[in-house]
Every structure is written in structure tokens, then in C-alpha cells.
Image (cartoon, rainbow, N blue to C red):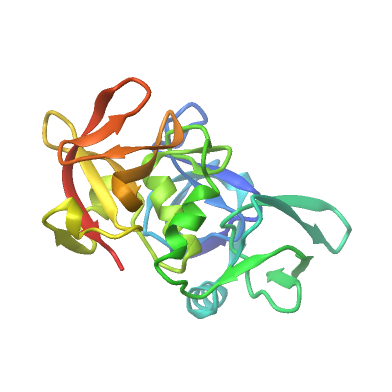
Length: 256
């Protein structure tokens, strides 16, 4: 088994080993993973954070040892909290990092990948935050454009949005909406929900295809065209601008 870590800002994870293949998720700086299969140009990986699998370009990661992988998995997790910031390498080269990027072995503004040392002077998150912080973190992504497979303010999908918001508060969600729907406790009515709970929506075939974060007073924040705020009722999401329901409510889950 081989292991790796992302040393670039944003790296696409694809469903097949090809540059033209569908992007299904992204690695951010500091994400570490197992290499399940290595080819000449592509590697199939399993991300440690959410066990998501897909293909990445071999030029877009650095190999690490099993020991380093285990240390990263068990060490305190620090994440950048600026929408966009940068780190400085020893040779004074700058690399950008986006919100939610992992800062490996962070201590006193220093972080480390193998023998490389970086400096990061920006703000960071560490540890579990109160549930009330979920909505505050969600607002950081407001108006971010929708992007299938995206996880950043420059493009994000519905489950990437909920996963990143929970991540910034110290909690782990799975990558896809249908898998996130298997987590937590089912609530019977909207009236039982609190800000920060998740609402899931299905299609005509009954498959869960969408997720959003419940707010106060029957509002929901979710990624649909962009990260936006709409009304939530017992039928689903009601778009205030078009005066139409856009998603059919399936289930409400309390994660924390």
C-alpha cells in the first residue's frame, strides 16, 4: 500500500483515469489518502477524511510513508479559515490555500510535508465548535457558484457545501448527499429541527440527490446554481424569486 498527500491548492478527483473524465470531488491542500492503484499517469485513491475514492494525476501529489499517514490521521487537525490565503515555502515561493485546507503538523505558524517546511500566518480552525456556529460558517460560502464535484468558494456542489461547513466546525460528513443521509438521527417534522440540521431531497425515482442546511424561521441555505437561501416547507424548497418549489423534501436529519 502506498500513501500520498495533496501539496497543491485544489486538485480534481475524477471518476475515471482521464483528464476529460467527470470530476466527482476535489482534494484541498493537506488532504492525505491511500493509493489503491498506481498507473503510469493516474492513481486511484481513497481519501482519509471521508473514504471517497477516485483518480488523481500522479503529478499532483507527494508520496508519504505509512508512518506519516498514520501520524496525520491521529494528530490534531488544523484548517485554514480565510476564504483564500497563502503559504510560503522555504524557497520563498507562495502557494494559495482555500478555506478548509488542512495544515499538516501545524505549530507556531509552521507546517510540514515530509522534509518541506511551510509558513502560514493566517487564521485557522481547530477542534469542535458549537452547533450554533454551523450557520455562521455556511454564510462564508454564500453566492459561491455551483460546481459538480466542487468543495471551495470558487465552485461547490450541494453535498460538498454541507461537508465543508461541518468540517470547519470539527465534524465529519460523507461526500455525497445519499451517503450523508445515512448519518445522524431522523426528525419527523420540520418543527423539531434546529439551525444546523440537514434536510435531504429526492428525485422522481426516490433517490436522494440534494441536501441543504436548515436555518431559523423555515429558511434553508443550499447550493443550487449558487449557494443561496430559500424557504423550506413540508413539501420541500420554495424559491422565493420564481415562486416555485425546486426540490421535494425526503427526510430531515440531526447530525449533532
